[in-house]
Length: 592
Image 1 (cartoon, one colour):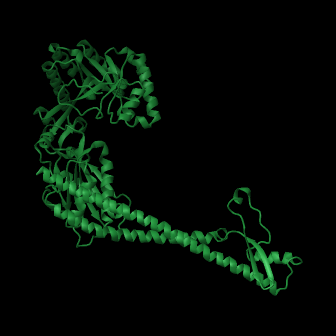
Image 2 (cartoon, one colour; image 1 turned 90 degrees about the vertical axis):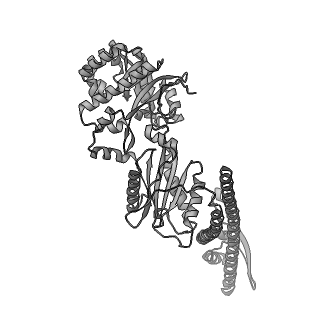
Image 3 (cartoon, helix red, strand yellow; image 1 turned 30 degrees about the horizontal axis):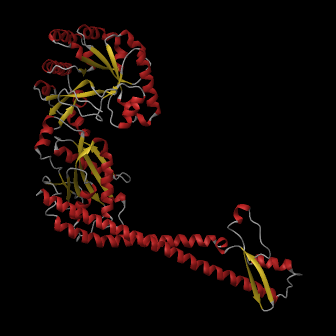
């Protein structure tokens, strides 16, 4: 079966390559013909204008004969008549930088006994406005002819291409199963996005996101219909599969309304917008084969990007909403709504108590490693909680914590995370430090820290536990943090200042021995390689942190360019998707 699929795919690829080569050859022939035609046109135009000059000169000689003018005695009169006809009796004078290519032409014109030697500027200078106008008209006509030639030629070849593809269509598995069709508004038939059917994907959706990839579900709409006798589904199936052959799975379904439902799977998070624009461009170019008069603004796309485990009904509803917004806009032809867009709304409107997910252990802990630049070793892990919501899939702390409805729920969350980290430290002894980002409420809760002091009495290697507090909370309320800091210090643990964006108050940190490092804010890291102001701020932070012997780390590093710039500014280490996804267990892997 795999061999058959490979052969079929190679056949389609060869067919597409042959078609593209034919296009390139025809385009080359057309360009050569275009240049040849334009050259012949200008030669003919030049000949016509030269004949015009000759006629004018002959008429001037005839006029001099009829007026019985003497070429020496009546030279001034003849000069005036010559000037009126565009001629000169003597060569004119031009600026030096024009003289090399604007020399006057001289001709002798005869009529009976009169013979006049006259000078005149080249006809392409005198009639330059006519040359420019006629050449523009000619170029416009040729381009107009090329546009219609392309439409007719490609339509003919594409029909043959599709017929060849249909013969292979039974062997090439590109149209993945699509869920039941559903009738939507505006007489548009839409399909729900297909669920991920593999066992591995199902496990990922249930237990956690193991990669930073998204899927795109798109609905497309054309303002103008296509010819009814064209097999559009096969056509677009071929074009989309060819255009996105680097993706693992692609689904294309033609709707009865004339639109398309497309699913693209396993797209890198950072490339979502790029793929969305590519999809619009691919569909537009494919549409021109049958509708050469179609413009980009007449193709509307609604897109929803989502991860494994997302509720397919919500994905479909968001895509329909995105398509509606795109159709209503005169200038925005693509509208994308991320699946996260609806999570806060669903959670806010839900009557369920999210703290029950914590109490029933419906969550997982992941660990984001922080790498040291010099050695490539992991220095520590940041503990990240993910709640398994029954309909929204995996929720990060940032998504579900704002929906916790009581202080007790917030306290329960932080206690549960800490308890699980302690269990891991006991069961998996490691030289690596684990940091926990506490909610601001618990930093000022003395009861929480009394509880913390009690449970830490029997915990080995307490120095491997760190707590993160935001820069804003620390500097604004540092007097209220004395009990929390003293309790942390008494058991041998430490503190990191998170979301650091300023260097002004770093000298104050010398009074807090429990603080062991700084983490830069994501806003300072993102696109730092392109922003001189961010680079200057990071350098200032690093310089002042070095004076108080505190290391500085980066967070949210996504590109090699950001990494290189952080190294250049003196940052000691960093974490982010550039290095690795959050891990489900401690690890001692290194990064080169």
